[in-house]
Length: 319
Ligand code: HSE
Image (cartoon, rainbow, N blue to C red; front, side, top):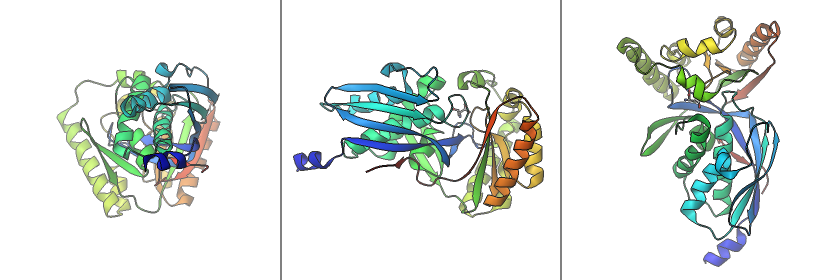
């Protein structure tokens, strides 16, 4: 049986590994959602030589190392094969469309993509939680900590909540059908490690109470499709006040987006990208226009994306 299964398995796979928005205002380090219009492509091939080799990096390849032990896709893939112990290896090609340091899960897309693809090539012995665990090893070398709020939505799709990291427990949160995201990516680099370093080690109890009330009510609102309550809950009184200083025009973008009717607007992950969530595609487009208008007046290059919520996460492009 085993030999027959081996023969049927693919030798090569191409995947789309999506960008993600972590934190989502009130859910620092625990909440995230998956985008569907922006992501990396990766090709993973079985090789007769044991181990993991990064053979190609194109697109935003600047400063991304080829050494397996220094590359996030390589490190997560190593974590998987150290557990599975195949008597063959894998070659990884990365077509990087998500700029590193953009705040929309660039390193997570690479870390999650390699383990997802290898799992497919070896007959899917691992579940999504186990894959998230392997990918966290790769993410850790990029950000300095093992956190799963970008990796989980890339692998599971939709909105995810990291209930705990050890043991790893991921909850999939239902998502109202009309939720659309707008992403403004100012092309300045904000390193996750630096953006974490400016955060306080202790927070006021009153801010903590507000934050966990917001997170709880957001999760409830998502379950009952209550857009008004989503809007009331998308507030971050703990992290945003510190990090927004790193993002030019953050307050203006947020105020304009909310005036136009966005449900919420905040920092995507550790920045510099800004996300907004809106009810309906049309509203998300209007928010994008307002964001464009503001950034067009600066000398900062930027990209703007509109995206529905990607409910499936990483996708196989060929079969
Ligand atoms: N939760 C993380 C942070 C996401 O905000 O630092 C970035 O990797």
